[in-house]
Length: 99
Image (cartoon, rainbow, N blue to C red; front, side):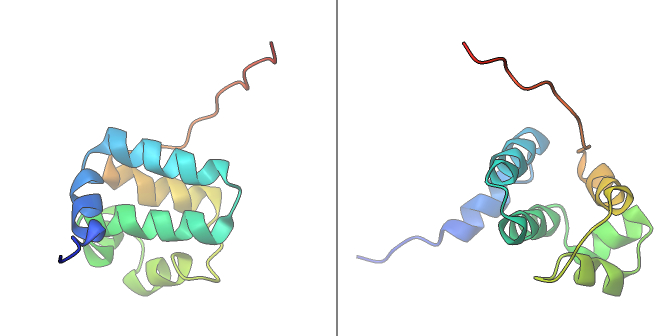
């Protein structure tokens, strides 16, 4: 039995901004920076790729590759610039009070 490649389905799903937002939020909850950068790379790839997102975000392509690398450390401004052309934004929400 041949296994189906999940990546193609994931990238298709990530084209939907609501799905992409939930995906990034879930990974962000893990507090794993490397995992978040991988997830952000997935969303960028689904959103047209590094070249297209870099152009829309007015960031040099090489800089975006660096930000999305294992050693990447995007600033809040850079993260906002990357997310905007993908139909996403950074938001702050209150933590639910314990019951």
